[in-house]
Length: 468
Image (tube, rainbow, N blue to C red; front, side, top):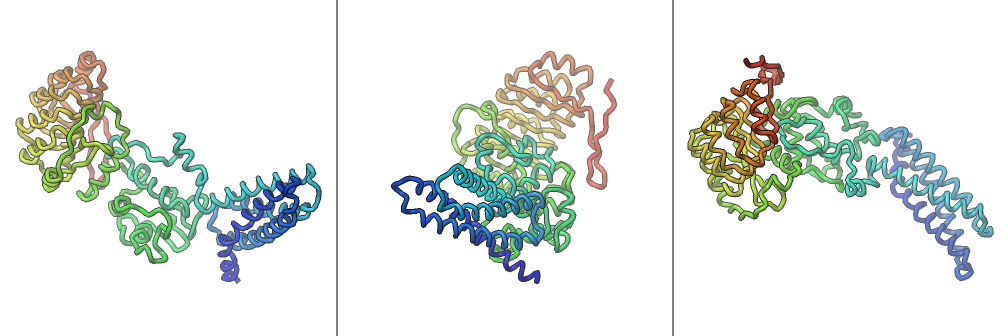
Protein backbone atom coordinates (compact mmCIF):
# COMPACT_ATOMS: atom_id res chain seq x y z
CA UNK A 1 0.00 0.00 0.00
CA UNK A 2 2.84 2.38 0.86
CA UNK A 3 4.37 1.68 -2.53
CA UNK A 4 1.13 2.67 -4.28
CA UNK A 5 0.86 5.89 -2.26
CA UNK A 6 4.45 6.78 -3.12
CA UNK A 7 3.81 6.03 -6.81
CA UNK A 8 0.76 8.33 -6.85
CA UNK A 9 2.76 11.05 -5.11
CA UNK A 10 5.37 11.09 -7.86
CA UNK A 11 2.74 12.56 -10.23
CA UNK A 12 2.42 15.71 -8.11
CA UNK A 13 5.27 17.62 -9.84
CA UNK A 14 3.64 16.77 -13.19
CA UNK A 15 0.14 17.89 -12.24
CA UNK A 16 0.81 20.79 -9.87
CA UNK A 17 1.52 23.31 -12.62
CA UNK A 18 -1.72 22.60 -14.49
CA UNK A 19 -4.15 24.34 -12.10
CA UNK A 20 -1.85 27.36 -12.02
CA UNK A 21 -1.98 27.70 -15.80
CA UNK A 22 -5.64 26.82 -16.29
CA UNK A 23 -6.95 28.99 -13.44
CA UNK A 24 -4.87 32.02 -14.38
CA UNK A 25 -6.10 31.64 -17.97
CA UNK A 26 -9.67 31.34 -16.65
CA UNK A 27 -9.29 34.56 -14.66
CA UNK A 28 -7.98 36.42 -17.71
CA UNK A 29 -10.86 35.07 -19.87
CA UNK A 30 -13.36 36.02 -17.18
CA UNK A 31 -12.04 39.58 -17.05
CA UNK A 32 -12.12 39.89 -20.84
CA UNK A 33 -15.60 38.32 -21.17
CA UNK A 34 -17.00 41.19 -19.10
CA UNK A 35 -16.29 43.46 -22.07
CA UNK A 36 -18.81 43.39 -24.87
CA UNK A 37 -16.08 42.94 -27.48
CA UNK A 38 -14.99 39.61 -25.92
CA UNK A 39 -18.33 38.29 -24.68
CA UNK A 40 -17.96 35.29 -27.02
CA UNK A 41 -15.13 33.72 -24.94
CA UNK A 42 -17.44 33.00 -21.99
CA UNK A 43 -17.73 29.28 -22.92
CA UNK A 44 -13.92 29.04 -23.02
CA UNK A 45 -13.82 30.62 -19.56
CA UNK A 46 -16.04 27.85 -18.21
CA UNK A 47 -13.83 25.16 -19.80
CA UNK A 48 -10.68 26.76 -18.34
CA UNK A 49 -12.26 26.83 -14.87
CA UNK A 50 -13.33 23.19 -15.25
CA UNK A 51 -9.84 22.06 -16.22
CA UNK A 52 -8.34 24.13 -13.41
CA UNK A 53 -10.78 22.68 -10.89
CA UNK A 54 -10.10 19.05 -11.92
CA UNK A 55 -6.33 19.47 -12.03
CA UNK A 56 -6.39 21.25 -8.63
CA UNK A 57 -8.26 18.32 -7.08
CA UNK A 58 -5.81 15.84 -8.62
CA UNK A 59 -2.90 17.94 -7.37
CA UNK A 60 -4.32 17.78 -3.84
CA UNK A 61 -4.55 13.99 -3.97
CA UNK A 62 -1.05 13.50 -5.38
CA UNK A 63 0.35 16.15 -3.06
CA UNK A 64 -1.07 14.36 -0.02
CA UNK A 65 0.52 11.12 -1.24
CA UNK A 66 3.89 12.81 -1.77
CA UNK A 67 3.84 14.43 1.67
CA UNK A 68 3.38 11.07 3.41
CA UNK A 69 7.14 10.47 2.95
CA UNK A 70 7.82 12.86 5.86
CA UNK A 71 10.72 14.68 4.16
CA UNK A 72 9.37 18.22 4.59
CA UNK A 73 9.08 20.79 7.35
CA UNK A 74 5.73 20.12 9.01
CA UNK A 75 4.66 23.75 9.44
CA UNK A 76 5.41 24.81 5.87
CA UNK A 77 3.93 21.57 4.52
CA UNK A 78 0.72 22.00 6.50
CA UNK A 79 0.31 25.58 5.31
CA UNK A 80 0.95 24.49 1.70
CA UNK A 81 -1.63 21.70 2.01
CA UNK A 82 -4.38 23.98 3.25
CA UNK A 83 -3.63 26.61 0.65
CA UNK A 84 -3.76 23.92 -2.05
CA UNK A 85 -7.08 22.65 -0.74
CA UNK A 86 -8.35 26.24 -0.69
CA UNK A 87 -7.34 26.69 -4.35
CA UNK A 88 -9.26 23.52 -5.27
CA UNK A 89 -12.33 24.64 -3.28
CA UNK A 90 -12.45 28.18 -4.63
CA UNK A 91 -11.93 26.92 -8.20
CA UNK A 92 -15.18 24.98 -7.78
CA UNK A 93 -16.92 28.19 -6.66
CA UNK A 94 -15.40 30.04 -9.60
CA UNK A 95 -16.67 27.39 -12.01
CA UNK A 96 -20.20 27.66 -10.61
CA UNK A 97 -20.18 31.47 -10.93
CA UNK A 98 -18.92 31.63 -14.52
CA UNK A 99 -22.34 32.13 -16.12
CA UNK A 100 -23.44 34.76 -13.62
CA UNK A 101 -23.16 38.51 -14.24
CA UNK A 102 -19.91 40.27 -13.34
CA UNK A 103 -20.92 41.10 -9.75
CA UNK A 104 -18.86 42.19 -6.74
CA UNK A 105 -18.95 38.60 -5.41
CA UNK A 106 -17.56 37.25 -8.68
CA UNK A 107 -14.75 39.81 -8.75
CA UNK A 108 -13.91 39.08 -5.11
CA UNK A 109 -13.72 35.32 -5.77
CA UNK A 110 -11.41 35.99 -8.74
CA UNK A 111 -9.09 38.12 -6.60
CA UNK A 112 -8.99 35.51 -3.80
CA UNK A 113 -8.29 32.78 -6.36
CA UNK A 114 -5.36 34.73 -7.75
CA UNK A 115 -3.86 35.39 -4.29
CA UNK A 116 -4.26 31.74 -3.23
CA UNK A 117 -2.46 30.58 -6.37
CA UNK A 118 0.48 32.90 -5.63
CA UNK A 119 0.74 31.86 -1.96
CA UNK A 120 0.41 28.15 -2.70
CA UNK A 121 2.97 28.32 -5.48
CA UNK A 122 5.43 30.18 -3.25
CA UNK A 123 5.07 27.60 -0.48
CA UNK A 124 5.53 24.79 -2.99
CA UNK A 125 8.71 26.44 -4.25
CA UNK A 126 9.95 26.78 -0.66
CA UNK A 127 9.38 23.07 -0.01
CA UNK A 128 11.11 22.09 -3.24
CA UNK A 129 13.99 24.56 -3.48
CA UNK A 130 14.43 25.82 0.07
CA UNK A 131 13.61 28.92 2.10
CA UNK A 132 13.88 32.23 0.27
CA UNK A 133 14.18 30.67 -3.21
CA UNK A 134 11.79 33.19 -4.77
CA UNK A 135 13.54 36.26 -3.30
CA UNK A 136 17.16 35.02 -3.41
CA UNK A 137 18.19 37.05 -6.44
CA UNK A 138 16.45 40.20 -5.21
CA UNK A 139 17.98 40.02 -1.72
CA UNK A 140 21.51 39.68 -3.07
CA UNK A 141 21.15 42.66 -5.39
CA UNK A 142 19.67 44.83 -2.68
CA UNK A 143 22.52 44.06 -0.30
CA UNK A 144 20.39 42.01 2.08
CA UNK A 145 22.25 39.00 3.43
CA UNK A 146 21.06 35.78 5.03
CA UNK A 147 22.64 34.35 8.13
CA UNK A 148 24.75 32.02 5.98
CA UNK A 149 26.05 34.57 3.52
CA UNK A 150 29.81 34.07 3.21
CA UNK A 151 31.52 36.61 5.40
CA UNK A 152 34.71 38.39 4.50
CA UNK A 153 37.73 36.37 5.61
CA UNK A 154 40.66 38.70 6.11
CA UNK A 155 42.81 35.92 7.58
CA UNK A 156 41.73 32.39 6.72
CA UNK A 157 43.81 30.98 9.57
CA UNK A 158 41.44 32.66 12.03
CA UNK A 159 38.30 31.37 10.29
CA UNK A 160 36.09 28.65 11.77
CA UNK A 161 36.50 25.56 9.59
CA UNK A 162 32.85 24.49 9.72
CA UNK A 163 30.95 27.75 10.23
CA UNK A 164 32.97 29.91 7.82
CA UNK A 165 34.15 27.44 5.17
CA UNK A 166 32.08 24.24 5.10
CA UNK A 167 28.60 25.33 6.18
CA UNK A 168 28.20 27.92 3.39
CA UNK A 169 29.01 25.16 0.86
CA UNK A 170 26.43 22.81 2.38
CA UNK A 171 23.90 25.66 2.47
CA UNK A 172 24.43 26.61 -1.18
CA UNK A 173 24.76 23.15 -2.72
CA UNK A 174 22.75 20.88 -0.38
CA UNK A 175 20.27 23.18 1.37
CA UNK A 176 17.55 22.76 -1.24
CA UNK A 177 17.00 19.12 -0.22
CA UNK A 178 18.54 18.86 3.26
CA UNK A 179 17.45 21.83 5.37
CA UNK A 180 14.86 22.73 7.97
CA UNK A 181 12.29 23.06 5.17
CA UNK A 182 12.97 19.79 3.37
CA UNK A 183 14.73 16.64 4.56
CA UNK A 184 15.20 14.29 1.64
CA UNK A 185 16.08 10.86 2.99
CA UNK A 186 15.42 12.22 6.48
CA UNK A 187 18.70 14.15 6.33
CA UNK A 188 19.40 17.72 7.39
CA UNK A 189 22.76 19.40 6.82
CA UNK A 190 22.10 22.82 8.33
CA UNK A 191 23.63 22.24 11.74
CA UNK A 192 26.01 20.12 13.82
CA UNK A 193 23.32 18.08 15.57
CA UNK A 194 21.59 17.15 12.31
CA UNK A 195 24.79 16.19 10.50
CA UNK A 196 25.83 13.95 13.38
CA UNK A 197 22.36 12.40 13.52
CA UNK A 198 22.41 11.38 9.85
CA UNK A 199 19.40 10.30 7.80
CA UNK A 200 17.10 7.33 7.29
CA UNK A 201 20.00 5.19 6.09
CA UNK A 202 22.23 5.99 9.07
CA UNK A 203 25.27 8.17 9.67
CA UNK A 204 26.68 10.30 6.86
CA UNK A 205 29.60 11.88 8.76
CA UNK A 206 32.51 9.85 10.15
CA UNK A 207 35.08 12.25 11.57
CA UNK A 208 38.59 11.33 10.46
CA UNK A 209 37.41 9.09 7.62
CA UNK A 210 36.12 11.03 4.62
CA UNK A 211 36.27 8.06 2.27
CA UNK A 212 33.82 6.14 4.47
CA UNK A 213 31.49 9.11 5.03
CA UNK A 214 28.38 9.13 2.84
CA UNK A 215 28.46 12.93 2.90
CA UNK A 216 31.70 12.84 0.90
CA UNK A 217 31.14 9.60 -1.04
CA UNK A 218 27.93 10.89 -2.62
CA UNK A 219 29.52 14.04 -4.06
CA UNK A 220 32.41 12.17 -5.74
CA UNK A 221 30.19 9.51 -7.33
CA UNK A 222 29.80 9.46 -11.10
CA UNK A 223 27.21 12.19 -11.86
CA UNK A 224 25.22 9.63 -13.87
CA UNK A 225 24.67 7.43 -10.81
CA UNK A 226 21.30 7.77 -9.10
CA UNK A 227 22.83 8.32 -5.64
CA UNK A 228 25.17 11.10 -6.76
CA UNK A 229 24.62 14.34 -4.87
CA UNK A 230 23.63 17.01 -5.60
CA UNK A 231 21.19 15.45 -8.11
CA UNK A 232 21.63 15.96 -11.81
CA UNK A 233 20.42 19.41 -12.83
CA UNK A 234 21.31 20.99 -9.46
CA UNK A 235 24.43 23.18 -8.92
CA UNK A 236 27.38 20.86 -8.31
CA UNK A 237 30.27 21.26 -5.88
CA UNK A 238 33.41 22.68 -7.46
CA UNK A 239 36.69 20.77 -7.26
CA UNK A 240 37.86 23.23 -4.62
CA UNK A 241 34.72 22.66 -2.52
CA UNK A 242 35.09 18.88 -2.79
CA UNK A 243 38.70 19.13 -1.60
CA UNK A 244 37.70 21.33 1.34
CA UNK A 245 34.92 18.89 2.31
CA UNK A 246 37.39 15.97 2.26
CA UNK A 247 39.91 17.95 4.32
CA UNK A 248 37.29 18.97 6.89
CA UNK A 249 36.18 15.39 7.53
CA UNK A 250 39.58 13.71 7.28
CA UNK A 251 41.42 16.16 9.53
CA UNK A 252 39.02 15.77 12.48
CA UNK A 253 38.31 19.50 12.29
CA UNK A 254 34.83 18.93 13.73
CA UNK A 255 32.52 21.86 14.28
CA UNK A 256 34.42 24.21 16.60
CA UNK A 257 38.06 24.37 15.46
CA UNK A 258 39.68 27.23 13.62
CA UNK A 259 41.75 26.66 10.50
CA UNK A 260 44.99 27.35 12.40
CA UNK A 261 44.17 24.49 14.79
CA UNK A 262 43.93 21.91 12.02
CA UNK A 263 46.65 20.19 9.99
CA UNK A 264 46.80 21.80 6.54
CA UNK A 265 48.32 19.61 3.81
CA UNK A 266 50.15 21.49 1.07
CA UNK A 267 47.50 20.54 -1.49
CA UNK A 268 44.72 22.23 0.49
CA UNK A 269 46.53 25.54 0.99
CA UNK A 270 45.73 26.97 -2.47
CA UNK A 271 42.02 26.36 -1.82
CA UNK A 272 42.18 28.06 1.57
CA UNK A 273 44.18 31.01 0.28
CA UNK A 274 42.01 31.41 -2.80
CA UNK A 275 39.01 31.57 -0.51
CA UNK A 276 40.69 34.21 1.62
CA UNK A 277 41.69 36.40 -1.30
CA UNK A 278 38.25 36.02 -2.91
CA UNK A 279 36.45 36.91 0.30
CA UNK A 280 38.43 39.96 1.34
CA UNK A 281 36.84 43.24 0.37
CA UNK A 282 39.84 45.06 -1.03
CA UNK A 283 39.89 48.78 -0.33
CA UNK A 284 41.33 51.06 -2.93
CA UNK A 285 44.38 51.64 -0.71
CA UNK A 286 45.08 47.90 -0.41
CA UNK A 287 46.26 47.81 -4.03
CA UNK A 288 48.37 50.60 -5.51
CA UNK A 289 46.50 52.91 -7.85
CA UNK A 290 49.11 52.59 -10.57
CA UNK A 291 48.81 49.84 -13.15
CA UNK A 292 51.39 47.08 -13.31
CA UNK A 293 52.31 44.67 -16.08
CA UNK A 294 51.20 41.07 -15.91
CA UNK A 295 53.75 38.45 -14.84
CA UNK A 296 54.60 35.87 -17.47
CA UNK A 297 53.50 32.28 -17.03
CA UNK A 298 57.13 31.15 -17.04
CA UNK A 299 57.86 33.27 -13.97
CA UNK A 300 54.76 31.96 -12.18
CA UNK A 301 55.77 28.39 -13.01
CA UNK A 302 59.26 29.01 -11.60
CA UNK A 303 57.84 30.29 -8.30
CA UNK A 304 55.30 27.52 -8.00
CA UNK A 305 57.86 24.81 -8.76
CA UNK A 306 59.86 26.20 -5.85
CA UNK A 307 56.79 25.60 -3.63
CA UNK A 308 55.72 29.24 -3.37
CA UNK A 309 51.96 29.75 -3.56
CA UNK A 310 51.25 32.67 -5.88
CA UNK A 311 47.70 33.94 -6.54
CA UNK A 312 46.06 37.14 -7.80
CA UNK A 313 44.70 39.30 -4.95
CA UNK A 314 41.56 40.23 -6.86
CA UNK A 315 39.73 39.50 -10.10
CA UNK A 316 41.18 41.28 -13.14
CA UNK A 317 44.23 42.45 -11.17
CA UNK A 318 47.89 41.84 -11.99
CA UNK A 319 48.87 42.34 -8.35
CA UNK A 320 49.77 39.14 -6.50
CA UNK A 321 49.97 37.49 -3.09
CA UNK A 322 52.74 35.03 -2.19
CA UNK A 323 52.77 32.46 0.61
CA UNK A 324 55.64 30.19 1.72
CA UNK A 325 53.47 28.02 3.99
CA UNK A 326 54.01 24.87 1.92
CA UNK A 327 57.84 25.16 2.17
CA UNK A 328 59.13 23.58 5.43
CA UNK A 329 62.32 25.71 5.65
CA UNK A 330 62.43 28.60 3.17
CA UNK A 331 66.02 29.58 2.37
CA UNK A 332 67.64 32.68 0.89
CA UNK A 333 67.51 31.23 -2.62
CA UNK A 334 63.74 30.80 -2.57
CA UNK A 335 63.13 34.16 -0.92
CA UNK A 336 65.34 35.68 -3.61
CA UNK A 337 62.80 34.53 -6.23
CA UNK A 338 60.51 37.30 -4.98
CA UNK A 339 62.63 39.72 -7.01
CA UNK A 340 60.87 38.32 -10.09
CA UNK A 341 57.53 39.70 -8.88
CA UNK A 342 58.64 42.62 -6.70
CA UNK A 343 56.50 45.12 -8.62
CA UNK A 344 53.37 42.94 -8.53
CA UNK A 345 53.69 41.60 -4.96
CA UNK A 346 51.31 43.27 -2.47
CA UNK A 347 50.55 40.52 0.11
CA UNK A 348 53.31 38.29 1.49
CA UNK A 349 53.27 35.54 4.13
CA UNK A 350 56.69 34.42 5.41
CA UNK A 351 55.74 33.08 8.83
CA UNK A 352 58.41 31.14 10.69
CA UNK A 353 61.33 31.84 8.35
CA UNK A 354 64.97 32.15 9.32
CA UNK A 355 66.79 34.04 6.59
CA UNK A 356 69.83 36.29 6.15
CA UNK A 357 69.84 40.11 6.44
CA UNK A 358 70.26 40.25 2.66
CA UNK A 359 66.96 38.40 2.20
CA UNK A 360 65.16 40.86 4.47
CA UNK A 361 66.46 43.63 2.21
CA UNK A 362 65.06 41.69 -0.76
CA UNK A 363 61.64 41.92 0.88
CA UNK A 364 62.19 45.63 1.50
CA UNK A 365 62.69 46.01 -2.27
CA UNK A 366 59.08 44.86 -2.84
CA UNK A 367 57.92 48.45 -2.57
CA UNK A 368 54.22 47.78 -3.29
CA UNK A 369 53.66 45.49 -0.29
CA UNK A 370 50.52 46.33 1.70
CA UNK A 371 50.23 43.21 3.91
CA UNK A 372 53.20 41.38 5.43
CA UNK A 373 53.17 38.34 7.75
CA UNK A 374 56.62 37.64 9.21
CA UNK A 375 55.54 36.28 12.58
CA UNK A 376 57.75 33.65 14.31
CA UNK A 377 60.64 34.73 12.06
CA UNK A 378 64.21 35.89 12.78
CA UNK A 379 63.54 39.50 11.77
CA UNK A 380 65.65 41.96 13.81
CA UNK A 381 65.38 45.63 14.59
CA UNK A 382 67.96 46.35 11.89
CA UNK A 383 65.99 44.32 9.38
CA UNK A 384 62.85 46.20 10.30
CA UNK A 385 64.57 49.52 9.71
CA UNK A 386 65.14 48.51 6.08
CA UNK A 387 61.33 48.43 5.64
CA UNK A 388 61.31 52.23 5.42
CA UNK A 389 60.92 51.71 1.65
CA UNK A 390 57.51 50.05 2.10
CA UNK A 391 55.46 53.24 1.77
CA UNK A 392 52.23 51.33 0.98
CA UNK A 393 52.43 48.90 3.92
CA UNK A 394 49.21 48.77 5.94
CA UNK A 395 49.36 45.51 7.89
CA UNK A 396 52.42 44.00 9.61
CA UNK A 397 52.44 40.81 11.72
CA UNK A 398 55.51 40.62 13.99
CA UNK A 399 54.15 38.13 16.56
CA UNK A 400 56.76 35.94 18.31
CA UNK A 401 59.81 37.80 16.97
CA UNK A 402 62.71 39.51 18.78
CA UNK A 403 61.59 42.98 17.70
CA UNK A 404 61.96 45.65 20.40
CA UNK A 405 60.40 49.08 20.76
CA UNK A 406 63.44 50.57 18.98
CA UNK A 407 62.62 48.58 15.85
CA UNK A 408 58.94 49.54 16.00
CA UNK A 409 59.87 53.21 16.20
CA UNK A 410 61.46 52.93 12.77
CA UNK A 411 57.98 52.27 11.33
CA UNK A 412 56.84 55.85 11.94
CA UNK A 413 57.99 56.78 8.43
CA UNK A 414 55.38 54.49 6.84
CA UNK A 415 52.43 56.77 5.99
CA UNK A 416 49.77 54.11 5.31
CA UNK A 417 50.50 51.72 8.19
CA UNK A 418 47.31 50.79 10.08
CA UNK A 419 47.90 47.56 12.05
CA UNK A 420 50.98 46.10 13.75
CA UNK A 421 50.80 42.88 15.79
CA UNK A 422 53.42 42.66 18.53
CA UNK A 423 52.40 39.76 20.77
CA UNK A 424 55.31 37.73 22.24
CA UNK A 425 57.93 40.26 21.16
CA UNK A 426 60.59 42.11 23.16
CA UNK A 427 58.37 45.19 23.32
CA UNK A 428 57.65 45.79 27.00
CA UNK A 429 54.25 46.72 28.34
CA UNK A 430 55.36 50.24 29.32
CA UNK A 431 56.75 50.83 25.81
CA UNK A 432 53.31 50.69 24.23
CA UNK A 433 52.30 54.06 25.68
CA UNK A 434 55.31 55.73 24.07
CA UNK A 435 54.92 53.84 20.79
CA UNK A 436 51.24 54.70 20.54
CA UNK A 437 52.09 58.41 20.82
CA UNK A 438 54.72 58.05 18.10
CA UNK A 439 52.34 56.10 15.86
CA UNK A 440 48.93 57.66 16.65
CA UNK A 441 47.20 56.33 13.52
CA UNK A 442 48.43 52.76 13.98
CA UNK A 443 46.61 50.05 15.93
CA UNK A 444 49.34 48.33 18.02
CA UNK A 445 48.18 44.89 19.16
CA UNK A 446 50.13 43.85 22.28
CA UNK A 447 48.77 40.30 22.21
CA UNK A 448 49.53 39.46 25.86
CA UNK A 449 49.01 35.78 25.17
CA UNK A 450 50.99 32.77 24.03
CA UNK A 451 49.90 29.58 22.27
CA UNK A 452 50.50 26.25 23.98
CA UNK A 453 50.57 23.28 21.64
CA UNK A 454 49.37 19.99 23.13
CA UNK A 455 49.12 16.46 21.83
CA UNK A 456 45.47 16.73 20.90
CA UNK A 457 46.27 19.46 18.38
CA UNK A 458 44.19 21.88 20.41
CA UNK A 459 45.47 25.35 21.07
CA UNK A 460 44.95 26.82 24.53
CA UNK A 461 45.15 30.57 25.03
CA UNK A 462 46.84 31.61 28.28
CA UNK A 463 47.68 35.06 29.61
CA UNK A 464 51.37 35.85 29.74
CA UNK A 465 52.90 37.57 32.76
CA UNK A 466 53.19 41.31 32.33
CA UNK A 467 56.75 42.24 31.44
CA UNK A 468 58.50 44.54 33.84
